[in-house]
Length: 297
Length: 157
Image (tube, rainbow over all chains, first blue to last red; front, side):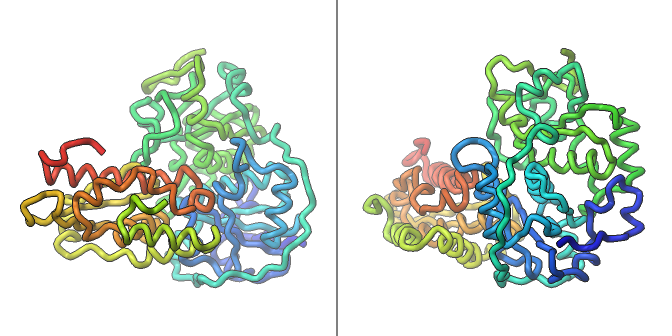
């Protein structure tokens, strides 16, 4: 059973306002039948220090990723995970997390690969909830294990592999959402982050640089539709007719941009390249451009 | 395998190994909560702290070595860490090192094996990528000790 959509004039301009909930809405609906609240963070212990009452933790690293192959869970694994968390196939899932919802957007994207229909983001994430002094608890929720069906993951519409990206160069827009220093090749991970994960610095030829954070307001919430449109449609020139691929270092920041392009601006064909720079920057003979210029085919 | 570890650190490894993976995370959380705050003389001078870049979240550390005794190897080492509350995993790693190594001698710490992070049984619970931070902290502690006691310990870790 799903929970009613939020009707919030602040969200009404977005293409898919039903993909967002406000902190007010969540506070009002905590404990509703059919609602599962999921926290997904960069730090594996952050949930344990305190979380929204009733929320369950889903860790991108230890739970959503396959622990052997560099890939996501398969259908059986996802069904086991969701069942253990007490989440039903027709539940409304609201995801929130740290870092302006990087990992929350990533979890939402992975849930979408399995076609979980009603999954929404808490606008502003964990920081917004805490900034408003709303309740947090260290108590573990008691959710009854569910019987989530085995659903095969469908990658084709939402996920790009390296060969897709190689073919995409020169045919459709590529959006690099990393920091400017990573884009130019000066660094191979975000400033303040360890230099890891790739053997070369730079970007995929033709990719335009739009750091993910440009979509977030100062409080971590999403900018307005108009502001987002000015950046992605006005400045970058993307449109709903485009076949778009977004990437970052390992696919988490680009999940945030994927959410903006697909759900807030309503662009129908947007894929996240989760292999991202940690794969492309290590592939033998993969073309790379250095510097500010997007580069050519 | 704890024979090559300082006693306090070896005990922590044993404690982690004695419990399930889930309880190990809980123990790590407790270490994060027990990490001592910086003394005022360091909170007022953050520039004295070294940033550990390899940690996924910000972690700052400072090493001090006593002036006596005359044999540098026998001098006691004092460790100071700072990490924000939003980074409990990183803080937990720091808490383990603080409890396991603070007050140990230069010689003892310089001989802590580099594979220490792998011995807590945390890799599955935390993920290998996140474990890198603890190794980096240990390496930087050794670097600072080497610099403070040069030339006796000018060797790289």
